[in-house]
Image (cartoon, rainbow, N blue to C red):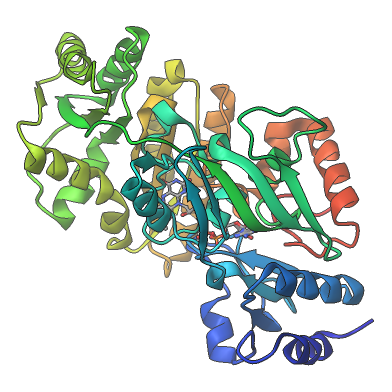
Length: 461
Ligand SMILES: Cc1cc2nc3c(=O)[nH]c(=O)nc-3n(C[C@H](O)[C@H](O)[C@H](O)COP(=O)(O)OP(=O)(O)OC[C@H]3O[C@@H](n4cnc5c(N)ncnc54)[C@H](O)[C@@H]3O)c2cc1C
């Protein structure tokens, strides 16, 4: 069997200049994603392919040698999925970043995996088209990474997640075989749905080298409203009432009291002090937006909002959306945080928020709660001091308790960030033994030597 240094030399010769990098400083930079408390191993090399043929060459060699391969996009992942494992090749797809076509008639885009989400969105908009999946990382994360994690975002409530837009894929399998799945047509049911087996597979089943995506006509400019509540339970009741009345907002976000405090300390965007919870809503339906927001304001007041109003102009609307987008940077400024990602049935949203408050008290760590209330998908963030070992342990325990709570409420441990390393040991609690065994069987059939992102998603054993 070839050892890692040999395969590095072999690939350097086969792939030409500038593709294989073994500078230790660069390797260290590429060894992790954005997740906290996830271990990373020491990679043997970073490989930055320019083509599907390069990817195939890498996987063929790695498969023969039994060397692990960790696919990477922009490393914005929050689950440690792109972290290096010892002796691996980091296969970073960032250089395969071409939009191959945008077809206004078919409303389709064909892209390489390293295309940044926002670049595709802007290119589609220039042709009057819309690519809806909009993770908050959209200015940096790649379409390949978005497909591999089945990323969500702010407007998924109305439009769906990344997987809902994936029509076809080109995937390089563990042994280097190039496989096409799905089709460009609007309909097609021949055979198993292999496309959506690879969607969300977090680099463990194949390397995505081309993606065919459905687009939509551009929507009308969104209108925005906000409401302020004395507590989060009232805000959750308003979320359920608004949606039960048939309104389909393009965004419905909640920030709890602790989140408002953290954001306001980071930047004053005019959020009233002492607010128990905020809902920010948008509607982009040209025909119903005004009526949608009227319903939102009325329902919010009925559920006890101290204030509920429609943004008067674009500047006011932008400020409200900015308040929501500042949640990430404001938390980063606090030090370390573990971002959870539980998703529960909407009817249990209030139970999730009160349960998280209880967990915060029990474990003596700050836990803020913001997220996509319309989807029941919240991001409780456990804030801790990484230099305080006792606090790190309490943060870990709180993080686990939040996932247990999500499951007990009939939800999932991850609505959009994925399992990676961070939640791997929780997967069986959600899938059960039979579900986990089926996952292992799929993995073994597509990657019998376990070279693709080993140790991620599936617990060892
Ligand atoms: C500030 C911030 C905000 C975020 N907001 C959101 C949000 O709103 N919604 C959301 O869902 N996520 C969000 N995320 C998480 C992250 O941005 C997403 O998971 C994103 O889809 C990762 O894309 P990436 O290109 O960075 O992939 P990476 O982090 O590099 O990789 C993610 C996973 O995909 C695999 N992978 C990457 N490329 C390929 C490929 N071509 N073939 C096979 N496997 C591959 C990797 O092995 C890894 O397991 C956020 C992260 C940050 C830092």
